[in-house]
Image (tube, rainbow, N blue to C red; front, side, top):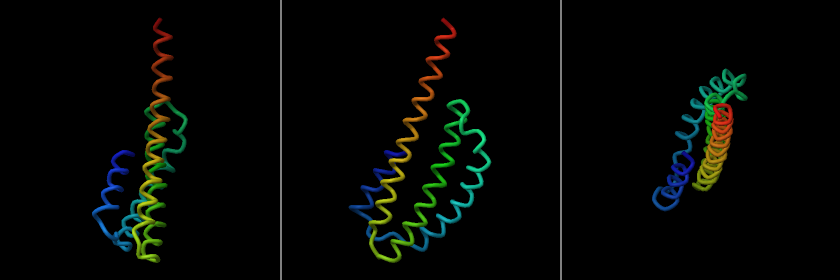
Length: 119
């Protein structure tokens, strides 16, 4: 997901001119509301096994990303430049990559523990 966001960002830098700030903000607010509801309902599971923790991290990341999109939409509208959108896209990609690394590490530890028990 993080690599896809980075690729989309590079594409937008070179091909797309100015994003539609109003549309960004509208969809960002709608998605933020849905993802906050999901993240709050999953909060009690954030320290479970790798699968449950991954679902929590995805929901949290989506909510944070949506909030960042709403802020970027406001700055795109104020500045009439695509840079706020591009900066937020790069930050979201970094967040996704960091979370992916955390999930992989957790799964690796669980696999190592399971292998140790079976030996």
